[in-house]
Image 1 (cartoon, one colour):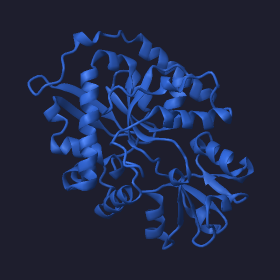
Image 2: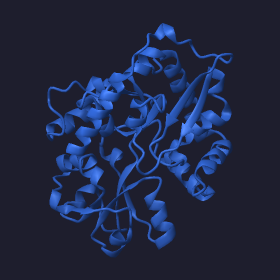
Image 3: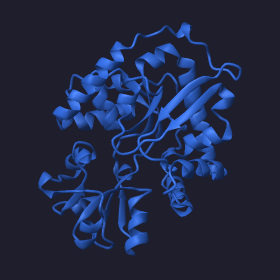
Image 4: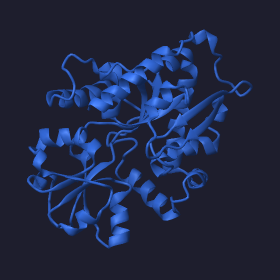
Length: 331
C-alpha cells in the first residue's frame, strides 16, 4: 500500500504540473480537423476490449472527428502514469477499486464511462464441489496480490471469508488443479476456458457480479485537464465507443478481431469467439437491467464505496463523486 501511495502521489504531481488549457483553446473534433486520441488499454489486445477495436475498424471514431490510436497494455504498463505524462489522452480503468484509489489519493483522474456493467471477475471451484460462493468459506482460495485489496474485501464482508484462506495465485493453474478443495480467481472470459481446453476440467464458475458485487469494469479514464481542455472530444470518444460495443456484440466482429489479432497474435479465433459469447450470455456490457452502453450511476458508485469504506479501505470522509463524472453519458 505504501508503494501504491507513493505512485499515485507522483502521478498527481505530474498531472498538476501540466498547465491546463481552457476548453475554448481546443477546437471541437471534425472530419476536417480531427482530434488525436491515444487510448491506453489495461492489457494486451483481447475480446474484452472488442468494442473499442470495433469503433476503430468501423469508422465510428473517425466520423466523429477523432483520430484514435489504441495503445496496447501489458505487464508493467501503468495507465495512470501514461495519462499523467501526457503519453496518452485517455486510458482504461480495469475496475472500480483502481479508480477509487486514485480519487482517495487526490489524483486528478476521473472515470467518464463504464463499458462493463458487470465486472467479469470470477471464482472457480472444481465441478460438483460447491453450490454457491458461501460454500467456499474455509477453503483455500488462490488470489493475486492486487485482488487481496480489491474484491476480496467484498467477499470477506459478505461471506465471512478470512485471510487465512488466501493462497498466492501466480497465474499458474497447477496448484488449483492439484487441490480439489481449492478455489481460484479468474476472468469469466479467460481462465475457465483455458483450464477446460488445456486440462480437460470444466470448472464451476461463480461470477461475483451476479452475487451482488457492485463494481464496474473497463472504464474510460480522463484527466481533469483533458476534461477541461476538450470535453467535446471526450464525449465523442464515449459515444463512438458505445456504438462500437453494440456493434461488436450484436453485429459482425470480424474487422475488430482482425485488429485485435494484429496487436496480439496469441488471440486465436476460438479464444475470441468464446469470450465474445460469454460477454453476451452473462450481459457483462449492458447488465441484467439493460443499461445504456457505457452507463454509470451515482447509486452504483455509492454502493461500491459504502462496502469498501465499511471495511476500512477508504476513509468515510471521502466523496466517491471525486472518482467519476456523468457529464459525458447519454441522458
